[in-house]
Amino acid sequence: MPHDPVFRLRQAVRATLDAEQSPPATLLVACSGGADSLALLLGVIAERDGGRGEAPELRVVGVTVDHDLQEGSAAQAQRVVAQMATLGVDETVATRVRVEGAGQGVEAAAREARYAVLEQVAEHVGADLVLLGHTLDDQAETVLLGLARGSGGRSLGGMRRGFGRFRRPLLQLRRADTEAACAQAGVEPWQDPHNADPRFLRPRVRHTVLPTLERELGPGVAETLARTGWQLQDDAEALEALAREAAERVAHPGGGLDVVALAALHRAVRTRVLHAAALAAGCPPSELGAVHVAALEAQVHNTTLLPREVQLPGHVRAVRAGDHLRFERAPVAR
Ligand SMILES: Nc1ncnc2c1ncn2[C@@H]1O[C@H](COP(=O)(O)OP(=O)(O)OP(=O)(O)O)[C@@H](O)[C@H]1O
Image 1 (spheres, rainbow, N blue to C red):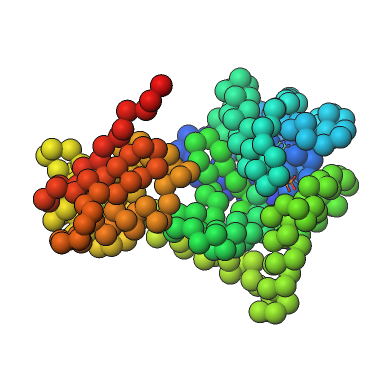
Image 2: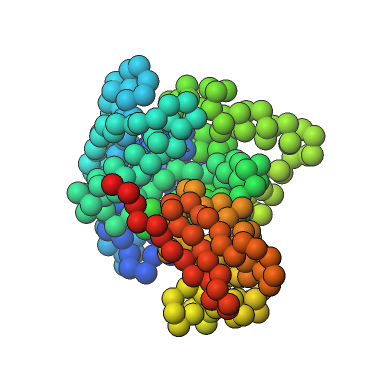
C-alpha cells in the first residue's frame, strides 16, 4: 500500500526508530493538534500496532503544550488530549508553560519554553525519544528564512533530523501528506490562528513568499530548498569536525591561539575556529555575529595595522601580541 498516506507516515516513523542505536521503548509525541503532529501520531500508532519483529513493544505517550497565549488555549489543549486518546495513545499529558516576550519575540520564546517543557515531560515519563511533526515544508521555510537573514552554513542548513532525544521523522514528507493522512483517518486538525497571522514571519513565508517563488520560478522550490538544506548540513558537519581538529593544532601554549598556525588554515575552517574560541572565551552565542568573526579574522592578517585588539560581546576582548591571539574577559562589575 505505498500510496496509503498513513502507511507512508508509518514508514517515516519506522525509519527514524531503525536509525537508533538501541531500539526505543517509550516515545513521547509532541502534538499541537495541527495536521502535522496528528499525522505523526497516526504513523506512530500504526507502527506500534503493526508489530515490530524483534524490537520491544512501543509505549506511546502524547503530550500537548498550552502556551497560554490565545483565548481558549486551555480548552484547545483538552481537545487535543481527547483526540490523542481517541487515536489510541497509551498515556496523555497536557502541560502549560509561561511565555515571556512580545511581538516577533513571542514565537521564539514560545518555542524555547516548549522544548524545555517537552524535555522535562520526557524525563518524567521515561521517554527515549521525543518526536516532532516538522515536515519538508517547514524545512523549506526555515532554509529560506536563514538565507534571508544571511546566516552561516549551520543555520542555512535548516532543521536537523534530531538533537538530544528530539527527532523529526516527517522531514521528508509534505504538509499535503499529513493533511491526506488526517483526512483518511477522519481526524480533524486544528487550524492555529497564529499560523495564518501575517504579523508573524513564518506565516508570511508560508502563505506569501513560498507560493510567490513557486509561481514565478516554477514548482518544486520547497523540495529544492529542503535539499539544499540537507547538503549544507552535511557540509557544515564536515567543516565543524575539521575545525575541532584544527583547534587543537592552533592552540597557543600560553592560552588563546597561534596566529601563524591560524593563517595556514583554510578560511572556512579558520573562521569556525575563531568563532568557537570567542564562544569559549565567554561571548554570548546570540550576540556573537559574522562581523565579530570578521574582525578576529582581520587580526590574523594584521601585520602592521593598529589597533591590535577587538572588542567582542560579553565584555570579551581579543588582543594580538606577536603571534599570539589571546582572549580576555573583563570582570563583570557588580
Ligand atoms: N502546543 C504544542 N504542543 C505540543 N507540541 C507542539 C506544540 N506546538 C508545536 N509542537 C510540536 O512542534 C512541531 C512543529 O511545530 P510548529 O509550530 O512548527 O508546527 P504546527 O504548525 O503547530 O504543526 P502541527 O501541524 O503539527 O501542529 C509540531 O509538529 C509538534 O510536534
